[in-house]
Length: 103
Image 1: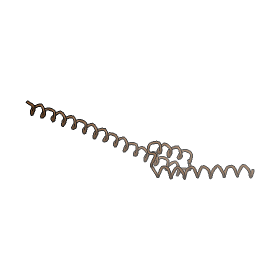
Image 2: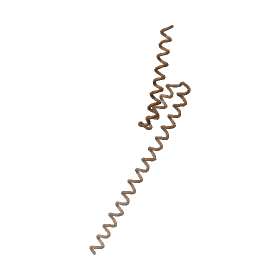
Image 3: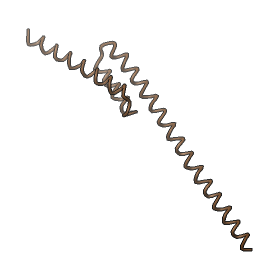
Image 4: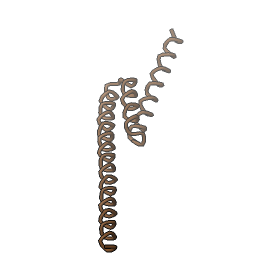
């Protein structure tokens, strides 16, 4: 009788552990899928920003790069490109300021 109780306890323990492991692995898989989809969205936004940058629309490009960084804050290309577009914006503002002064 005691052996039967011990076997039943072991079966319950094993099934509980199996369910726990299954839940943990399933939730981590979903987290990875979310992370991958965010990275894809960030890359798409950077490509859009690049198109805008090449059209000399630096403000709009900056917005696209900032949105990409909201999706993936460690995306180095978005950070670098954001810096370049902000630099270009500043250069244009300086040029416009100097033109006003010269008038």
